[in-house]
Length: 171
Image (tube, rainbow, N blue to C red; front, side, top):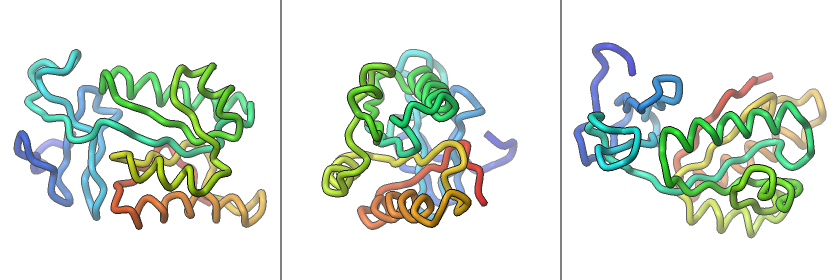
């Protein structure tokens, strides 16, 4: 977390602008404008002494996954390892072009990114959407890319779900 920043009281959802530190500073998320953070409490493995409380248990990850692109799959792997270390027992669902491949390779729940109703229902049942990483928010490959990824983000926001952009290049 940032030095001198306001901290969320234990057991309460952070207010906008409040920094909520995690076990790993690199994974720290700031709550602002409706965005929330993954928090840990003293009962979670690896979180001893943090004094923080779990405020979410299930995340959906959206990105260019299941296309068998080694760079994007590496980003997913790194993200999953960081999340598993920071929040043991966190439920993760990955939106994928090839859900069977993604589920098998990464040992996660995975659903088709191409089924809007399925994606909507999964986000509705989640606590957070993570969008990333890589160059998702760009129009170089055509307008469909930015429309798709921002559409998933808009769906989450319409459902009142917080969104976290992870390792995103923009433009």
